[in-house]
Length: 88
Image (cartoon, rainbow, N blue to C red; front, side, top):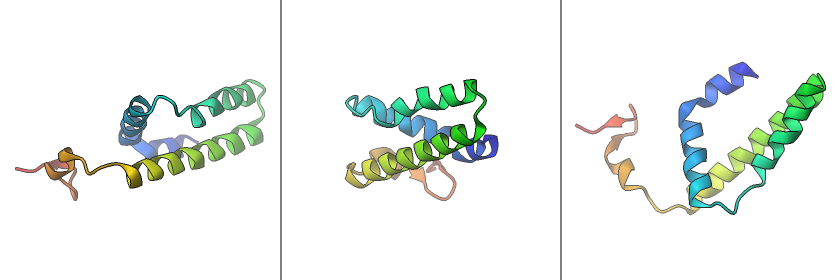
């Protein structure tokens, strides 16, 4: 699980925070957290992994849908996509 978390990186957390703030009515995937924590507390690793995988897939769907429906970001025009650094 830690390897998977390392791969998503800080950018995903930032994006999810921005999406959550932009659409505060979306609470579906975040409701998964309690079940994941309960499974961990019960030391049921199979259940915890299954719930976490489902949560990540749902979150990925939310991100993809938000990106498809979002207007282009003016910040994107200022950033080099290959390096994710400001254009100079």
